[in-house]
Length: 64
Length: 234
Image (cartoon, rainbow over all chains, first blue to last red; front, side, top):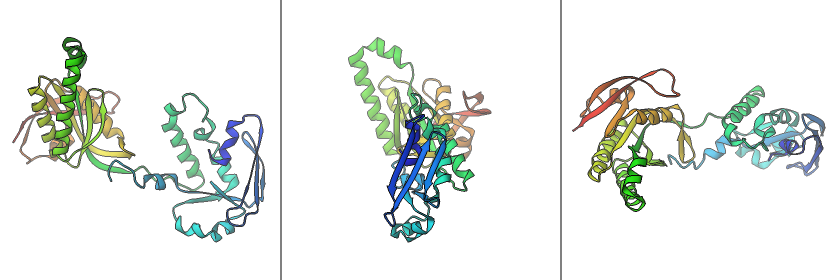
């Protein structure tokens, strides 16, 4: 489950994701409550996700 | 998902340049994307049943942010569905042991012919098979061989063949062309090989004879479909 989707596992509760920047190791913090994002620190934070289909297609069995 | 303090940090990340088709977005944008049903409804008991719709919603949410999931791989293929006619009645008449033995023989025959004609077994479908071929001529010749050999052991099959674009879903195939192939097979009688007009017109000159079986409505498939029965393979 992706970090920004974890809030749906805890309906009605504040969820905090605190992790380290993959580049510099400094803290990245996100507070969420259901639909609302209460805090993104720092505000410039970005998420990076591998293209889900490009990766899963590699080695796809049916027509290799 | 990997989190970074800013886009500059992503660009400094050594692995960034290996991932040219990957997605980078502000966390606030990702948070909106992750509102979609695919993630929100993860705990629902019928989650898997709705997964196709959830994927569509996810795709739309990404598009709104200027990102796009590549379409699933689609290739032109010929699909062949086979099915044993009247299998339930035969199973009860013959008894479990004899029926199981006959079924195993049927499976051996079908698999051997699919291999012989260069096809690929995709999966078993009850008492039949879904297979795919590079071209319709091979599929029809394979169908004719399966029909003859299964008749020799006292079984009767119905077979449907259709050519069209299919989606590659791991080891499986999907898409409307696959559904059409299944419906064509359902429309066939015992010992009959039915093909769509697409297939019939694709194999002109290949030494295969057909009779026109008229227009059919295929359940769940839009439009009317002209089907043709294979009457001779030389």
